[in-house]
Image (cartoon, rainbow, N blue to C red; front, side, top):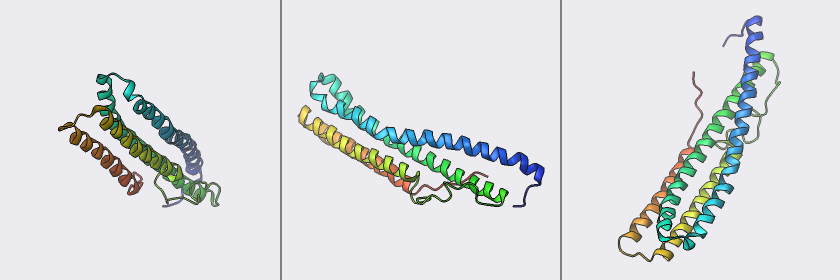
Length: 189
């Protein structure tokens, strides 16, 4: 890549720095979204599962079906936030390199010199948040499954069908976790 003419560089450098600033705001949003997911959601689902026996039977069925499905949604959206956070921090890293190249010295470099750079998709925050949501999902699926089999005493075809639903939820959550580990940022041209 050829160096820009001085007048052109005078216009481009502020644009790069503005993108850098905006991306850091987006990074803060993604980190906050990741940090809030596990404790808030696990608490809400935990309360719902714990109160199942006090609910009318018609409401119990809704909780038994909706909770596992909502856990898949939670896992998918958490993984999406982690991927998006990865995209942001990789782009920030690219801008740092470009700014440093243009000014001729290492002026900015938090992301490009970070010790965990490229180790985990979405950084340590993304990794820990996804693991926390995955662990919460497993525990909540076990809890809702236990409550289902203790509360309903349904027998027949309902028990294997519900067990299959719970297995599918764990499999879908595991798949999302697996896909995240293989994700790689690909900058657009």
